[in-house]
Image (tube, rainbow, N blue to C red; front, side, top):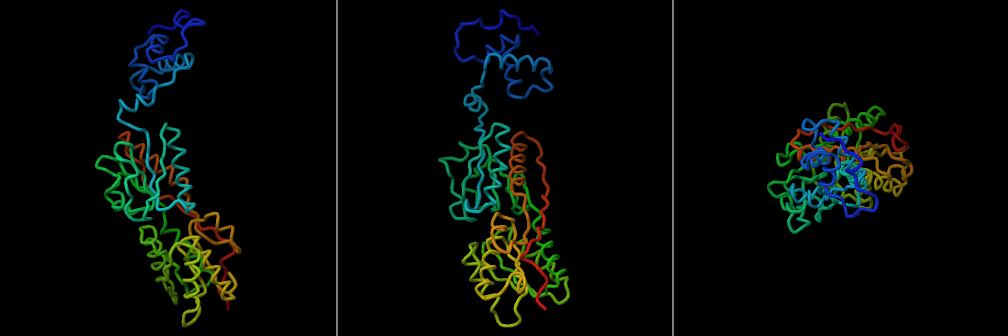
Length: 348
């Protein structure tokens, strides 16, 4: 390989047109193919580390910037991922996007955030053709069949917080949701609670089904424990109304309300106040997700912290692995019970 000499470099006052890969190749004394390998980060095993360094130095001195649009056209890649979520109003999905976008940016990718118009229902193709505009799809807390309109037949799909049995996905990234609910149940039963209401999400999805099963399975092992499930839409007012009904139903009053998320828990706390009950002295309330809302209410919520940003990071990393022909890492991310002031022993 020829070394660059002073005469290889453009003299002062020379044509200042945008440098090309041919200019970089000439300055570095290598072929254009070598420049493409190095600047495309595909040189390992093909080009020596010393040569790669010379090419990068030449590109930097010349101020060379690759034409990404042309390169993507040649590769048939747009370097764009679509993140589909059930709603934009939930903080959890905003944090998932933050994590995915951070990993994407480090690899020259962009992430388009797209809420399914019908919540967990079928998501429409946001573009004239998703296959023409995207490299892959990441979907959070949705079912694979809800994405048929935008998947096409050749777009890899990574599912987050979704049923691992869904065979339509190239990879899954999940949270250990069941363990989170087991931690909640263990905490409350250790405090002495036996009469429990499950304020459950009225939305039918894998993640909420897992919470319900884990709660019921855990309480089935506790002598004298009983649980009644009351569904509610995912908003504070609906949760408040459902919790009022549960707390005023005939029979002994429940001593704890276990909620599928923090929004429902906020509604349960409002219901207790409307009924003249104190949280946690008269009734304990627990949430799930550890949203900002969990510390905005009074008393602050005992809840399960979910590493939402890490979910997004893992999801984007899995999609990149699939696109590069590598096997993505699949594992359940641990969750953590955060005990705050909304839970205490039941009243005597």
